[in-house]
Amino acid sequence: MKRRVLLLEPNYKNKFPPIALMKLATYFRMRGDDVVFYKGDLKFFVLRQITEECIEKFASLDSSINWKLRADRIMQYIKTRKRADLEHIGINDSDMSILIYPWIEHYKKFYWSGEYKKHPRWDWVGVTTLFTFYWKQTIETIEFAKTMVKDKKNLMVGGILASIQPDEIEKATGIKPWVGVLGKGDIDPDDEHNIDELPLDYSILDEIDYVYPDNNGYFSYSTRGCIRHCPFCAVPILEPHFSNYLPLHDRIARTRRLYGEQQNLLLMDNNVLASPNLPDIIEDIKSCGFDKHTKFVQPNLYDIAIRNLRLGMNNRAYIRKCYKLLKNLNETKIFTERLKVEIYGYREAFSLLHPETCTRENLLESYHIFAPFFDRIYSKSKGRIRFIDFNQGVDARLFTEERVSLLAQIPVRPLRIAFDDVKTEKAYRKALTMSVEHGITDFSNYLLYNFRDKPEDLYHRLRVNVDLCEELNVSIYSFPMKYHPIRGEHSHDRDYIGEHWNRKYIRAVQAILNATKGKIGRGVSFFEKAFGRNVDEYMELLIMPETFILFRLFFEHLGYTQKWREEMATLSDSEKEELYPIIFKNDFNNIEQLTDNKKFQHILTYYKNYRGEIADHNSELYKLKKEFEEELNS
Image (cartoon, rainbow, N blue to C red; front, side, top):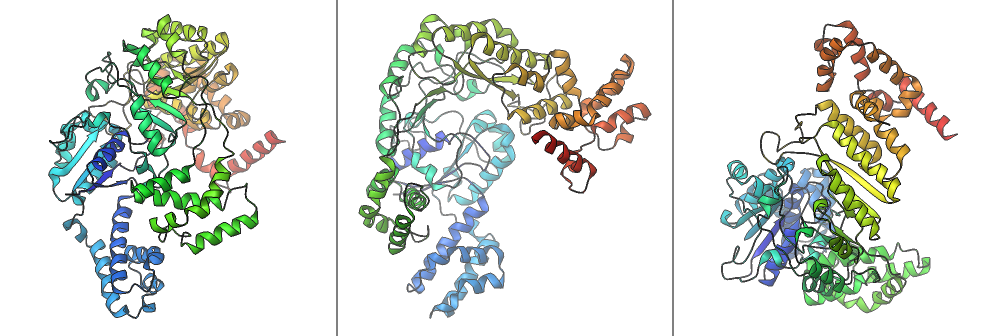
């Protein structure tokens, strides 16, 4: 029997689409089930579902009115219960209004009383999970999912958090999560498909409003697991066994055939260089069209959407896709105003001006009219360079001439080489130099801090990268990444402080990264201004008042920074031992309660949060900052 399947991703911000849910969408569609994907406000999801049922009921009572065009007004009344919103629906336009009014009140009550929780619509619900510090959003989503599924045994919670903290999730929700990846028969015992190796269903991304920053590539794995067991890493839990080689070609080919060519290839391997099958992986990548010569040409997205509508692959997603593409036709710059008016007229004639009235039948019927316009747009597409990204990074300790020569055969950009520990500096430098000798010039890495490292270690690793940029004439983008424990007291928040760190140091690094937009690239002078010319200046920055860091030039211009620096210089060693622990706590709301020492109290006044004054148009600080900016720009 055909199942109604709901796939949910909690409403946190994330960079990549939910790969596991995309595999599940493929799986359930292969089984002939109806699949819906949602990410967003959960209350809105319920409201939208109830509104759709309400519209169906209205249409059954009076089909002479297109109630879909009034969906927003119907939803607004169910949401607010205000009489003005009820009148705005225009129910009196119908000869059947006497029958319709009781039903709008029924659905309003159905929503507000929570009655819908007693009548779940979904046969199977899946919830994916990500980082442990998204605990609150994740638990809320699981609790919501419990009200959506007919039988809780058909609610599956999986993913990173679920695999790392299954006991905690079960204790909080009563749902026992799935740990690790899904294989054969893990959902339906009679099914022989290895779910983890299924291709992704890209169509579900068009079902939601959320746009993933990285959504223009093939997402896949060529290996699974890792040979290392780093204490800060969740991979040994998520992927405990190292798989040397997962062929890519067939999965990429299927994605290309169903969803069109994608520009880039993002491989989520955790340690690809550990595979003895690296030569096979590189050849596989090249056979998928990712060599150094093949360029990406944007496919005709309208043709793909219409074709998939004809096939009935995911009507919900492709109707939304076509609507957006047609709407964009009226905004494209290559058409004259006369043509735009003509396009608008065609959309109006086929009821394609509103998403509520945009139907599969009308889209298919009007294809021959709109296709020439899209042909003109896509015929102008020029080939673009495409890249491969081993997004989880490669292991510097595994670099050899043979392995680097293989990597150099494909357009890797950037090559992410892990540099999480100063102890690996020798291997890291060797890996970087070897890569440059083979023609690779674009690099990136995540620099873990707040683990067992010291604050000086972060500065040293950043400095190594900045100096290597100049020495080797390459580009290296460093992304400092704060360590969060995957288990224990602070695994559900972002408040963990490493043994050599404190709250003030953490906030200072974050303030510096706020100015650099989270990354540090090439440029010695820029780096030295941001992090200091040496370790001493860097350590001074870490203890500097936060607003002095955020508005560095302005407070230096006012002389505040220099006054603070001079007063800090008057402290004796014993005074520092007493004052610094207060500063390290980074809480300056009640200075008088922090210390009785008047000298300390005066110094601590520099640590007040000046951002409110800077934003206040009536404050003296706001006026001074505006004058300063005008001088800079003159």
